[in-house]
Length: 485
Image 1 (cartoon, one colour):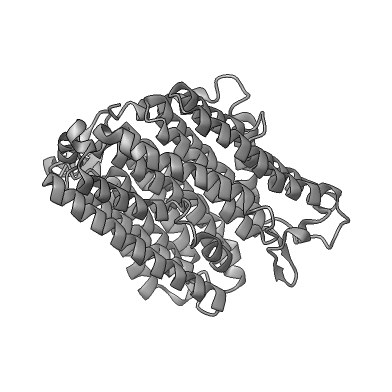
Image 2 (cartoon, helix red, strand yellow):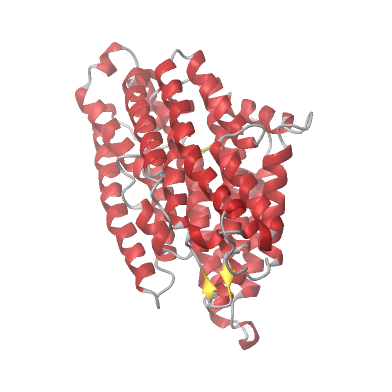
């Protein structure tokens, strides 16, 4: 029992790892009656729920394992819950879509579990080696998921592009980590923080170069400009359920990793990394806002949308304050909900001849299917940041943190980029409600309908009904207190 208690902080990761191995064995030796892998899919959701319960049951406070390489605090617990919820919902909406094309094999949920395991390790990383192990575990499973449709050239191409560019980014991250180790003598975030303090650290060119290369590697994972080049092609080519997973859970985990790395390992070098984060934020917001205007493929549009939203979230990190970190957490939580709802709608864009990804095919949707048009419209308004939807409050928190930290130019550029981005979100609403109707879509399935209804209720009511946002805001505030500023 004492040994089990000593492993307490690691139990969610162990549950996912052991669960994925058991489901892999079951999938190999499963009975012929479960040829489509649905049983493995439901069991994977149960494993994700079990991991979430183990996270909730962990005691308050900070737990450290493996000499600081693995840290569990209030920040890690909240971000892990977001990742697990995003993974479960992304898996749930994949069932019907993959079954339609006879691709709901047992490997898919196992890969989701393995990727989620890596993401949980990333979030708790307190050491450069643990950071890399978690990142690669998540990425290797993601490369396979991107090329999951082996019968489709686009999917294979997406997987290959993702793998090649991901390997390049991992190499840069490793090179940066080796420089940081060489100039600090340790891979531990805490030791790095002790060395990277004061005026001497700011003049240490080798350490700054290492920091830059590490940031480049992580910027690739969150698809921040100018390391975004893989995102539109992979989002367009990969299966839509996989894209929903990439755009939601993996983004949250990578952003959590970036926040922990900057605020734990390099708090003494804030002026140095703050400049880089400000540049990444401005470039991502502007490209995400302008490049999406001409897109007519809904998945490519969502790719540029996700790039823009990463830029908005980085505003909170650039503030380098408790208020800014709270803003990042709230932004990623709301972004997760909006993205999963939007992809549930995209998966419902089906006719008898198959799914469609063309925005023009949404023409007149309100006349054929008003509930779907209302849900998709509400999610577009929220993604645009229009009040009183939740997306407005997400941007409000990060802009306020930037203003309170004196980053007025960054906040103004963020507001202007948000206005530009509103065009392509509102264009979709215009197509659905005002264009000449086209053929109606097939009825919405139960799983996608449940996700659409739940996410729309959250973006509509969570910030306008009194007392509803309080638990989330308080949890984000408690998580932000996990770091020193």
